[in-house]
Image 1 (cartoon, rainbow, N blue to C red):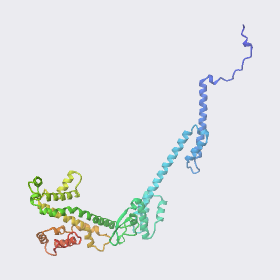
Image 2 (cartoon, rainbow, N blue to C red; image 1 turned 180 degrees about the vertical axis):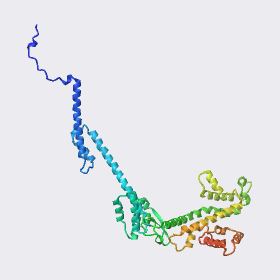
Image 3 (tube, rainbow, N blue to C red; image 1 turned 60 degrees about the vertical axis):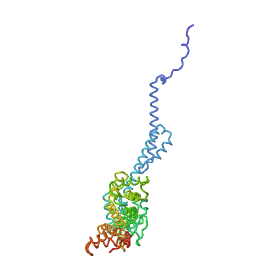
Image 4 (spheres, rainbow, N blue to C red; image 1 turned 120 degrees about the vertical axis):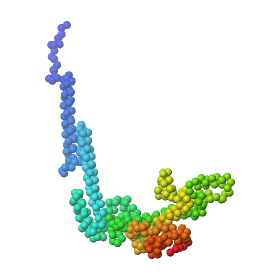
Length: 427
């Protein structure tokens, strides 16, 4: 049968080529569409960022993020826009932090200067110091002007103003620390450091760097309180020696020196075995003395935790390997010198009864040992012959050496280091 299809009308053919029939053409078209969408999204993000810039030129990251979120066209480039906005916010925070630190440092600098100006002759001198320091460090003029405007012009108010700045510079913890002071009546009390900072003046009208006590007065008071606190410790440290001394004097020469420990050990073994009656030897007394001397060594200033430090401290103090006369002399000397150390504050009180603020103590302490004879503080432990030999060696009555000893003896008695009677009788 013949093909007659060609005799029928043909369907219309498309004018252009089908994109699906050409993959390269399809990919090119898709790329163009994506570029168009990206351009539109970037324009939307850029518009949001631009809209967040204020009239004064400041950028508001939060407003930019809100603009990006409100525009659907910004979705394609939203990630980049969010990153840009957040980076801008982080840079703003870093800049604000740096500006704050700079202002705080400048403020701390000028406050530290203000807090140290209590010794300035007058407010005008303080203004010159502040101005000069500010000029050298390029301190902002408004900060300096504000500081000077708050400065009282009267001396009393100026000192209080300076002291308040000193308390701020010290910080809350230091300003509220309870500090010991000596009251006008000679008693002691604890007050906040800020109270001393804002005190109008110190002893004799002297003002310190913080507007409170003058530096010399404060240092002298601190030294007095420290020496007074050490007196009880000194008394406790010599108690073992005081207990040991009469026992050392009762023991025999054979209980001391090299080899005495082995000899005492043999006697102890014989006593334990019943060969020697209990109490027939001085072993118990020697052991008690050894205990007291060891207590002194352990409390010694140079005794550390190491064996070397402990050995050094032992050799620097009385111990049983020394002879009996050496131990007696060393114990008496150590007790006397410790008594002398503990007597410095009552000696000052007796020498300067009118100085209730203790402003002159540090000067007195610096010459105390040169002007004091330590033998006076062990006078009660001397035998009658030792006392006579000591007095005979001082020179004639009224001579410098004799007078120094007599003054020291009176000092030892008045301070309670030695009793006025019972062995302390003398000149």
